[in-house]
Amino acid sequence: EVQLVESGGGLVQPGGSLRLSCAASGFTFSSYAMSWVRQAPGKGLEWVSGIATTGGSIYYADSVKGRFTISRDNSKNTLYLQMNNLRAEETAIYSCVRPTGSYILNPFDHWGQGTLVTVSS
Amino acid sequence: IVLTQSPGTLSLSPGERATLSCRASQSVSGSYLAWYQQKPGQAPRLLISGASSRATGIPDRFSGSGSGTDFTLTISRLEPEDFAVYYCQQYGRPPLTFGGGTKVEIK
Image 1 (cartoon, rainbow over the protein chains, first blue to last red):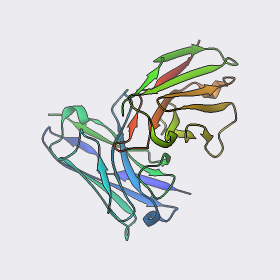
Image 2 (cartoon, rainbow over the protein chains, first blue to last red):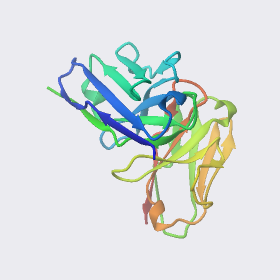
Image 3 (cartoon, each protein chain N blue to C red):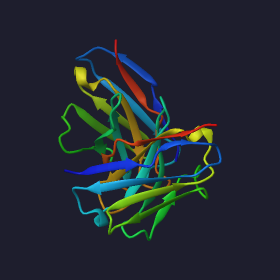
Image 4 (spheres, each protein chain N blue to C red):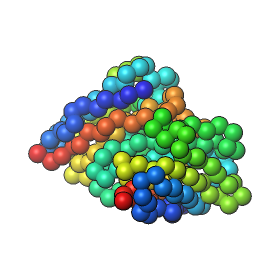
């Protein structure tokens, strides 16, 4: 069974930093691209970033480019999201998602339950 | 690519047909358009990919159609468990984008 378990969320002040992790199991992690998607309370879905199987190809939403960094450690089956200079409007549940195949440009068939990031003073 | 979903809310009764629209600001290459269902407190569930291919385990009352800039999700006869929020997503070109969602509520 595919499992994606996020951690690292919490309360951070505007301008602060946070690093999210996603522990993957139940599939060959190194064979799949991975992405992060966020959802502000009561709002819609927003794709944040995606990374290819070896990390050789990475994409970001324009809203986070230059402040967020996605990475992965295939030896640990773990996906990361380093978030710097956070803004209040980025308060959201951040979820780790697995696409249907090895490319970033695929729909998502597995989602973690997410970790809540609250940006507030 | 900006995706605009309409209507924002659809009020229908069980057994009725639901038609949800997703319009893209540019042509979605390869019809790389997906639909998701999200219920309160749950992660989204993939329903349709490639504009019209149902994901594994999705009932055939769900169907997708369209190409280019105009896409439609149809639920032929609403079951009680179908009342939820539905999102479209394009994955043909980065950045991947989602529509704002359509809430299907019980009338």
